[in-house]
Image (cartoon, rainbow, N blue to C red; front, top):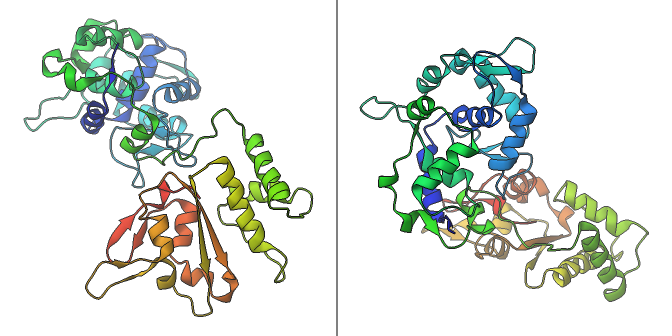
Length: 375
């Protein structure tokens, strides 16, 4: 049985853009939960969050934004939504926007239902085409997104039936007014593929953070033990009890860690041993970059500068970190004697990118995203 093709999923995300997220998320969730018409039943953000976890949580999520919404405008330059998406933006849509006119919801309660005229209310919220006709929700675009990792029937008629069964869309009048399933406009050769979209390609499609090397069957505790074993047994470093674990946890909490101490106490040796320990766990996936900071160090020494003729004169750090074509690797950047110059000066662009996953504009007019690099 076939799967959704990557190309068809890309087209689906473009096609879903004009629709309000309440139609593709809240409405389908409420229908799946079989909320009644003309009365109410218990339903809350908790159930909607479960729905989001099932259908709207692809790999590659940035920190604290686990949900990807293909609907409507971007928020903060992103289609990724926060953990409280249901109880914030979607809650506002169902209680303050015109959708509320089709919903039963006693104030300050967890009871919800549909009003008898809800179909017309929701149909009125559909986007319009150039001829000012309502654009119904496209079943096969929704199916491409919602069933992106499913083994599916290869028949479009059966796929439409599956969609209706999944979301309990049993009312023919409702389905006809809100949805369109045009089998004749679809080409099976382009819609389906023999294998599911792999996670790396899906991450690229949703503009997520590349996944990087996998631990496989190993746990985080296994990773920490492997690092400690390498540092103590292979690098033969003598360190206080718990030091490696504290460093490990510090990197998890903040991807920029400063080792302080007198010259000759082993700061660089430890950092290199840590990088080599990672290399032992992830062969050929760890890139170590050493930058020796000087007293007159500037941002040009860190990320490069714009040539007189235009374009970027890149440093080794920029070449390895941004231009290597290996965004999924693990990068360990060692700043030797970083206190010899003002870090806020020579890391003016790079430091915010490391700390907050914001894009960085390189000299010469090139913008690249630091989000795709594992620190």
